[in-house]
Image 1 (cartoon, one colour):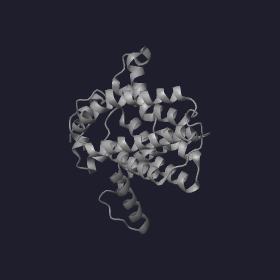
Image 2 (cartoon, rainbow, N blue to C red):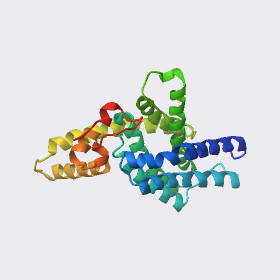
Image 3 (tube, rainbow, N blue to C red):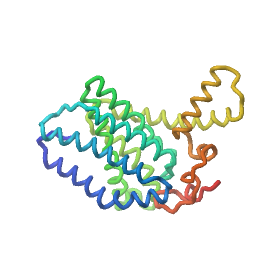
Image 4 (tube, rainbow, N blue to C red):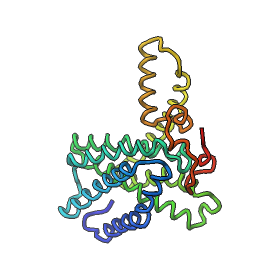
Length: 266
């Protein structure tokens, strides 16, 4: 992040967002919605709420020359909507390697609303800064894919591989840029935890499928796993088994989807 007096950095930051939105995102929304069977409303809500938070934060920072900014109710609400739409979109995400691309999105979808609420209740500008900085992963991911595509660093590798690397890396960089000590480490550990959670839910849901619970603990576990499956916390293969969702099974033609996933059908 930058100080409110560093207007050149602010202009570059906003220019990068505008360039990506008008020359990439604006076209990709329709393509993404049609290819992955997603409703446009969820995509637009996801984009608009994230941009609302970013705009409010940086406008307040520059207009009032503040370094420490606290969230207001509208920021918390926007963040909550952003998190809900994130979970919806990532539930059937098939771009890149789903084992590495879905956990960063899932982690952000859960942690950002929690951090936003905590920053509002505790009146912590540092927590709010982390939450806002995490949104820049959108920018860093597209720049990362562009970088790998046009430089020799991953020459010979597919664009789905570039996507798989750029998504978690961009999230870590964005959170590190907040300057809040330990924030990126917490995110890395949480991301690893979510990846293991997906594996565990996939395994346990298969073990418990069709079995009658014999105790209150087993009943509670089954209900918790059912809720996690509903939210998408499982591997895509398991979600395909339990969810009748066209977005999970239809053949795809998308440069960021690996061949083995593009041909998936049940």
